[in-house]
Amino acid sequence: MFWVVTIVSGMMVGVGAAIGAGKGGPGVQAMAAIVTVISVLAGELGYFAYQLDQIVTARGGSVDWVLFMASSPMLLVGAWMNTLFSLLSGLAAAWVAIRYTRPPQFNPVQTASKPPGPGSLSPG
Image 1 (cartoon, rainbow, N blue to C red):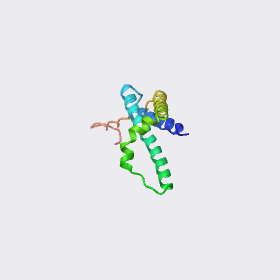
Image 2: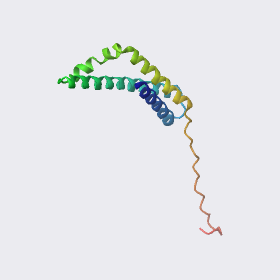
Image 3: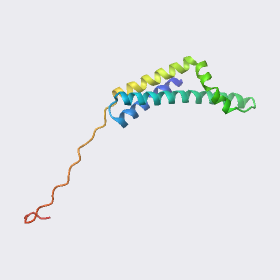
């Protein structure tokens, strides 16, 4: 179920990057990839933290969040299949979104008309 969240967040990053910076070039794609990786890993850890808090609270205990954060790399490696799938689907969604988002449309600004010169018969 959480793969849907991963894909949607990856698409949101891709669309946001493409709209904010125009059609996705290598720099925009790199920025979108970095933001996607960070958001996917943070989301995965947030989900682990929620599950852990529910289990520990149900047993009457409390979570040592400093220990949890210190153990977070091991948690992500321990659940490597979930982490890898989430990362790949998020990056693919961001890449697809950047590819298919239209660049922003800029309309030319009209300049003000020149005031009539001295001796002109135009009202003004």
